[in-house]
Every structure is written in C-alpha cells, then in structure tokens.
Length: 619
Image (cartoon, rainbow, N blue to C red; front, side):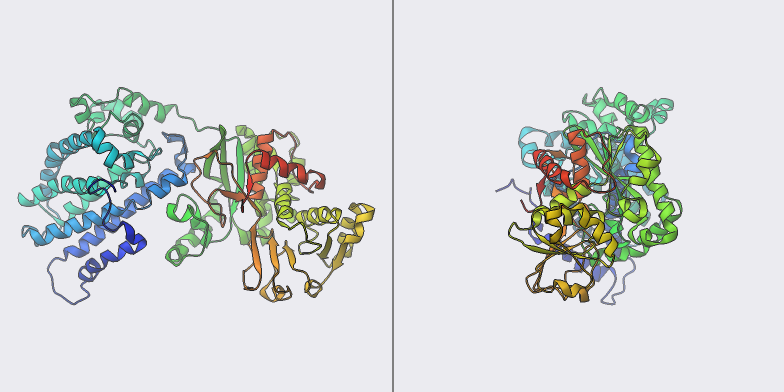
C-alpha cells in the first residue's frame, strides 16, 4: 500500500478518467440552457485545454532534434520506461480544474469580472514573488527529506531526462499543494479588487510555460542576456539551472527565481557555467550510424516522436482520435515537398555508439511519380554526402530509399562517389535472412511474388539450395532464366516460373514481395501463412489465414534511450534493413552493401546479428 495521498483517485479509470470532465462540459457550454453572466466552468475548461497545449508545444519543440539538438543539456534519450511512468502526466490539470470549480462556487468574490485590470497583475506579481516563491522553495526542500522524498517526490525525480511532461508527473499530494500555492496570487488579487478574466489565464499559463521550460532539457535562454543584465540570473531560472536540481538533488530548489536558492544557500555553483557552456560551446555529437527513412503516408506522418509521444511510443495503427490532424499533416506534406530538407527524427545509444534516424522529406506515394525520382535521389545523395562529411560510419537505406528502379539499391551513389568513407548499406541481406528463418524447416514448396526483385532473387536462390520448390511469379521469362542460371545445376529444377496466382492454390506458404489485392489473396488455400517484404504491408483480410509482419528484429537489451516505435513495429523492434546497418557497424565491416544480395553471406549476417544480441521478434 502506498503512502497517504500518493495515489490519484481516478488512476484505475485509465482513459475513462476524462469522463470526469463531463459535468464541466455540460455546465461550461450551457447545454442545459441556463443563463449566467459569467460561466466559469467554460473558462476552467478552456484554461485546462490550453495548459495541455502548452505542455505539448514544449514537448514538440524539445523533441525536434533538427531545431534543438545543439542546445540539449542531458544528452541521453527518453526510453519507454520513462514514457510509461509519465503516461498520466495530465492528472494535475484535472485535479486543479476541480479545485478551481470548488473555489468558484465557494467564494462570492469571483463574480462578474472585467476582461482586463492592470492593478490585478501588479497585485498578483507581488504576491507571487513574496509568498508563492517562498512557500514553494520551503515546501520543495521539505519534500527532499528522506521520508517525503521516498514516498512522494521520488516519482518526479525518477525521470532521468526531464521533458515538459515530467513537470506534470508527481503524486496527488504534491499537486494538491502546488494548486494551493498557485491559488494564492490569484485569490489575493481578487480579494484586493484587481481580478480580471485575463489575469487568471495569464497567471496559470505563464506558470505552466515556465515549468515546462525548466523541464524542457533545452537551454533556450541566451547567455548574452545574463551577461548584459547579471541581476536577471537571480530573477528567472533556466532549463540548465533546473537540470542540475535533477542531477544533484540537494541544490537549486527554487520555483522560478534563483534568488531564493541564493538566500537559502542552496544555489549550485555550477549553474552559471553550465548555462554558458551549453549555449556557447555545445556541439552536437556526430552519429556513428544513420538509418535513412522516409514518410509512409499522410496519416502515419503524425507518428513521428515530436508530435504525440503517446502515439509514437506505440506501434502505428489508424486511430480516430488522430484523424482530425489529417488536414494539418497534409499541409505540412505540401510544405515539405516544396522546401524541406532531410532532418533528424530520433536517436538512441548502443554500446557507446550514437544511432540516429534521419528522414527524407518525401512520402511513399511520391516515389511512384516519375517526375519525382530525380528529386528523391538528390535528397538521398545529399544525405549520404552530409553523413560522409560529418564522419558517420554507416548509413542504412530504408524501404523505398533503396528501390531498385530508383537507384539500384544504392549502387547509383556508390558508383558516383567512389571515395565515400561512410559505408552505404541497404540491409537486404539481413532482411532476406529474417524472412528465410521464419519459414518452417518442413516446408517443401513456397509461392513467391516480387520474385525477380533483389530480395526475391536471393530468397529463391537460397531456398532452391535447400531443395525447396519455389513457384516464382513473373511474366518475364528472361529475368526468371537469368536467376535460374545463378543456381547450382542440380538445384535449378527447384525454381519454377508461374504467371498466375492460380498456380499457388495448393501452396500454403506465400512470400509476398509485391503488393497483392484482396482478390489475388483469394487464391491462397485455407491455412496459408503470408510472409512479406512489401511496403506498405498487404491487407489482412483472410480470417482463415495468418499474416506475418514486415521483416524485423528486436534490438539488443542494452540499447539506451529508445522511446519511439518504427512505423508498425512494436517497442524495441526495428525493420530488418535498420538492423542490417547496425550489424554492419558492430562488425566494423569496411565494404558497401548495395546492389544485388550476396546469397553466400545470408547465414553469416544472420549469425552476426544473433551474436550481437539482435533477436527474432517472436523470441
């Protein structure tokens, strides 16, 4: 059993906790037709929504690595454990909304208020500086005592990398007290006759803005500001100032004003130097490995980590709650098409090496527009050259970025730039290995679509060597015969060209490398399992069949700071082409992996992946 008032009353309601807002919504939007001169329920709802928006904006900004990476204070990434621990970060908004309702209906002072009153802002500022700041400082120090910290405040400090959502993560008691402390300047200004509607909005949103800033892990305050006006460093804290409180917990207790730490002799002596070094001498670390991805479609574009953390930390699925963002995402897509450059999406650490995901500013459908191909190749080439200049060791091409018709699986760039130091990898060798190791050992026949693609060719040649009959769907006899001739003479008989799906009506192992329609799926017999390496995945329509996921692997257990999912992959799972680049880096191989797949290396790459801790997704 937890400490008294440490748990939230509605913590067992999960997402249904938001139903507790229903009475406020009914009253706030006057759904009963009641006449009120001032509907405080509406304002409480509006302020609550804006508070959530402030936290979201700060989170998005701090997670946009292409904008803020240079000024990151703590270089670690946010992992899934922290995200889950902060999942209900908005509990405090709900609590303080209910507290505001009680105040509004308990005190007659809050009646008809003007829109603006300058006196109220002066009263509020004086009360905040003189009472709220002092109370918060004293109570915060008290919560760092052994008894209260272990039972209450340790939850807040469990987050190794502060984010705006960390500001809202705490126990019921802590946020109850914080709500009371926040109320002092607003109620005091009201009692003195200076209240206004604007005052309540301004104070609460500024309060949250500053708390989110302090927990953003991005140093936004320019060092020149404190250099020219030194006294300001005692009047307003900075993100680096508060980060020291999280790393060295017996210092920097203040709410927003370091003056109280100076008076209480708890001001960390490193504060000013850390701020200066982050702002002036903080160079972003060069990644060792880059996975060069692209956007799949408009809807999945909001799955990036800097949009909705709760969404990106789980495998992508179509969700109705995200659909309203589609028009905005569509506009962003058009802007990206016209002006955007390749950008950093996410990062994690593995055995001291920095791994980053970059994204080409192009969506899946654009890869199939003939007039877009040169532009896409230019983006990929620029990304490879940028990685080469920076000193990146390995860059792995994702999905359509290595399309054979687009650039020959990366061959175009390696031939054009023969002196590249960065190793370009398509990762298809490991992709083939993953698919092949999913096939049961007792299978004697498979049906293969996309049979003459890079992956299709490698899979067909590997399987025929094992004596497995491969029905290769292709209309090109010339391409089929070219692949068949690559097989050992005694194995060529196991490769069979077929031109219609009907040929596989008795085969229960389908390997899908080219998208198939629902009608074409109907030719598969009941009990068929669809393995696939096609993007996007085929529709799972047959209830009497089973569908494999795209080729993927689980990352090693010692990965640090991984907090987002790769498209439809689950937590801790990456596409096989991503994993292939990781193996290339871990093994220290000095060759490019582009063009045709070396069938003789499939088992070698698979064994190396297992050696380094990568695992099949069902393990």
